[in-house]
Length: 266
Image (tube, rainbow, N blue to C red; front, side, top):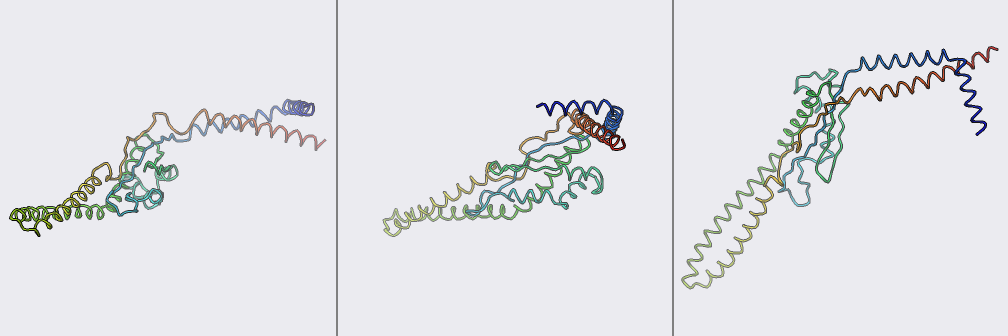
């Protein structure tokens, strides 16, 4: 403890002897900090949740989502996809707005909830919201194209079941009339046909239930886009705090270095 006290006292004496260097460096750093706060462009951050579309009547053991979460994230992070989004709102791919959009995109997947949290920054609240909307709109169009064939096949399968059910019900009515005449074979066939009808009705009910919006839906945003009124960058308190600490550190370093040079010359 005594050695520490002596060291602190020595440091204080060094700062007193070289206070001009300490203050000069501190002023320079604070001036640079002030200039940075004046030059840095304001940025706002938009947050949105993306729900990946799914087609429930998928083969057993297959993921019902149109595209897996990992593949969606990889798609969103590709330059080609981001360029399409930027162009869709009238920006050039070489603009500063496009560069900020690419660098600021953050994606946090929630596998168990089938959601991806996306955050994007822009130079205005409106532009941040527009970029998020354009991103989801483009992703939705791609997923709609991917799921078009499986959804069409599911609806065709439902139409086939409906047609088979109507045919089976017509056959049952005919067999019911034949069974009324006392034909034993007609009674056996009627019982078999009733089993077929029940199986078709069950298959139709399961397929219809899987096609309802609760289980089959498109990619979308379940909640509105959130853009806080307060800008995300620059944060004056944080920047001035970092500038002050940096100025104190560099000022102390300059004072110690200057004092060491004077001792060396002596």
